[in-house]
Image 1 (spheres, one colour):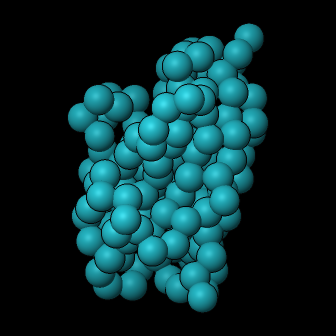
Image 2: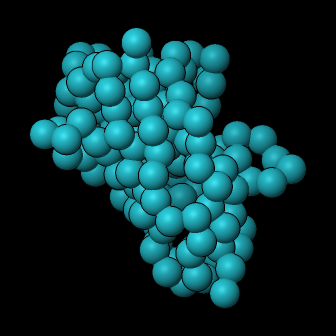
Image 3: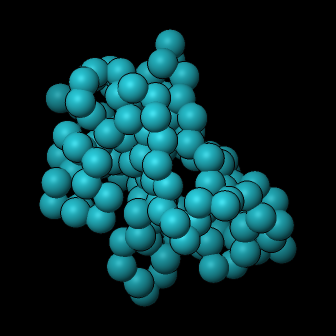
Length: 124
């Protein structure tokens, strides 16, 4: 059984960089052909796909967030990390990491394993 666990600060100041780590157990992040995504949900709104890092290490980001987003990985620790720069209060929400067997972006039904999510608040 694959398990994902998000970790990181729950409070970030405006203009700073949000950094979250997803630790995966029960499966390797380098296994073909899985894609590991970050997805968020602002309060009162729907899910928003942020980006993924593939089994190969390649990345792809939402066009609306691309200029501020970086996803990297540490395969030796079976972790992948989100960095979102220049945050504003609009970046507040619950952040999830999740796995899919393909680059499904916003097809959320195709994601088979999710973390529980972590609340991030952007406030001074």
